[in-house]
Amino acid sequence: MFVDIGIYGLSSSGKSVLFDLLTGLPESGDRGKTRIGSVTVPDPRLDQLVNWYHSRKVTPIHLELHDPGLGHSEKSEDSLSDARLNLIRSFDIIALVVRCYESESVVHPEGTVNPSRDLDLLLTQLILADLEMIERRLVRIEESFRKLPKDDREAYEHEKQALQRIKQTLESESPWETTTLSDFEKKKVSHYSLFHMKRYVVVGNLGDCSASQDAAHWAALRESCQSHRIPCVGVNLKLELEMKDMDPSEAQEFRESMNLESESCRQLVKGLYDQLGMTTFYTAGEKESAARCVVQGTLAPQAAGTIHSDLERGFIRAEVFSFDDLVKAEGSEPKVKQLGCLRIEGKDYVVQDGDIVLIRFSA
Image 1 (cartoon, rainbow, N blue to C red):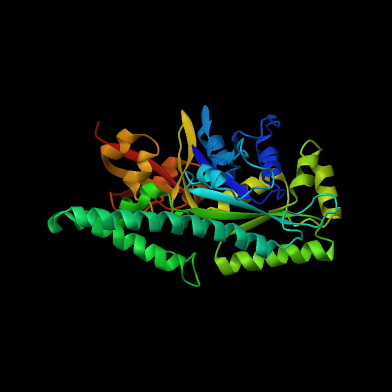
Image 2: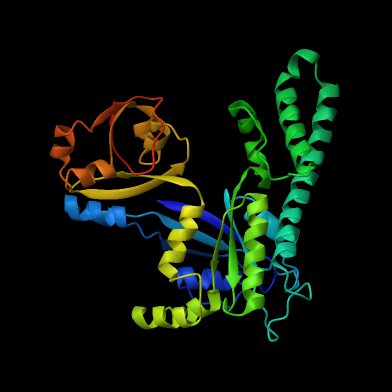
C-alpha cells in the first residue's frame, strides 16, 4: 500500500536531499521533471506477524515521495512558483522542508537562516493560493446564480457556504484551524484540492545540533510548528545521506559524537509516517501478512475497501482483535479466541490502530 507525499520548500532547503536519502535513487540530471520514488515504512508489528503466521508474502506500507522539478521556464531560485504549487496540489499529504543550519557555502534565498520565517513563507503561499482559487470560484457561482431559477440553486448554495467558511478561516488569525464542514460539503469542495484540507508534516533539515546557533534554529522551528499545530521531525539530511552506507554501529557512534537529535534513515521514515496521524491496521495469515493505513476515524467498510473494492461493496462484518491481544496470546490466534478477545464488528465500527482484521463479505 502506498501513501503519496509531495515535497515542498524553499530552494536550498534540502528537498532533493530528503528525496535522495529516503529513496536511494540517483539524480536524473533533468531538473525539469518531477522525481518519484518509494521507501518502505519500518513496522516491527508486521515483522512479528510474519514470524507468528509464517507468512509467505509480506506487504508493508510504502511512502511514495514526489519531488517537483523546477519546470523548464523557472529559475532555480523560484521555489514558490505557481507551477510547483500545481504539482503538489494533487497530494493529500505534503512534507514541508525547512532549513535549520548555518552555512557560508550554501546561500539562503532570503539572505539569512530563519526557520520560523521560512515556514510562514511556505504556509502563506499555500493560503494565498487557496484564497485566489476560492475567490475565482465564488465569482463563477454568483454568475451561475443569476442564470438559474431559484429552485435550481441549492447545490450551488451548499458549495458557496462551504467555500465562504473556508475563506473566513484562511483570513483569520488562525488560518490552519480546521474548518467545520459536513460530509456533503466536503464532497462538494473536494475536487478543488484546497491546501487547507490537506495534512502536513514539517521536516527540519538540521545542522550540527551541538552548535548553539543551529540548535536555536531547530528549537525555533519546533515552537513555530507547535503554534501552527503542524507535526515536525528533524534530521541532518546531508550527514545521514553520507552515512547511509556506513556500518550501523559506526554511524550511530558518529551521530552521537555530533550530538544529533535525529537518528537513522530507517527511524526517520518511521517518524515521518507516525507524524502523519494515520491508523495502521493489519490482515494476517500464512498466505500473506499486510499492513494497511487509513485516515483516523475510518469505518470498517471503507477500511475493507483499501484491501479490495469488492470487500467494501459486499461488507457484512469484521472479525477483529488487536495486536496487543495477540501478544498476550503468545502469537496464537486460537488462544486469542479462548481469551475472549475476538470481536464481531459491524458497518459503524471505527478501525483502531493495531487492529488485526478479517473481513466477511458477500460476493
